[in-house]
Image (cartoon, rainbow, N blue to C red):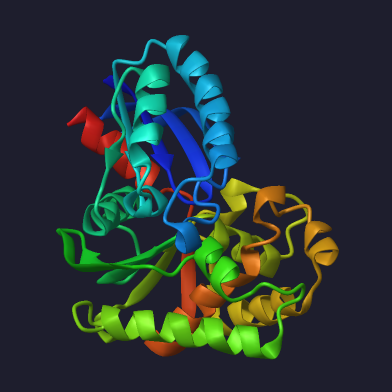
Length: 307
């Protein structure tokens, strides 16, 4: 058994998993998520904002303190969409190294997709869910599509549509206008056109959705009063439910969305964009349902660090 600290720094959130890993078994010690919005403005400026770096480093200080107390043997941190795009990433890299003692790995969209697939599907071996799976990881800056089964991924593609990017690029009013939603949908559609060149969505038997946009939509569709990972993990909701939640979110004001206790405060302003990505994927792929997973790239990072 090996104790691993896995960190995933995306466009919207910074997450930590400390886990004991033995073969195909992973036991959580600590699993945390903080919204840092590292990718604030990166789509427009191509640079990390100083206040976004400050928020990220403050959370990293906290995570580093916790890691130091838990007898961790290996630390692996990956950084994804926003860091791939930022011209001042060296400032971020230096700050991470100072706090964790390791360099963050700026991984490609394809490696991000493979880690997400591994984290989400490793525990599905022998389950009743039909294969092949299409694993869709909707992040803040990008969305990864991975098609595969029990023997691993067969095709993958990462595209630059995510909840933060769509909100900053298109959904700027509160609530967004019909024209803004139409523009965001067209952007997502164009990205899916690029995906289907390499990932044949029509061959997927089960859609598995990852990350906070998906789990929040599922929590809302289930009518949960508070966020309950156990109730959300492997819950299946219909395409009609996804569309209803998405339509409602895009018609609500910020204060109405903030009233949902299942929603992290840091997602209130971008959840409409994330839900729209999921809704559009399901419509374009002809999926009648989606299965949510609380296990994702973090789990994939932990397994990779232990191997």
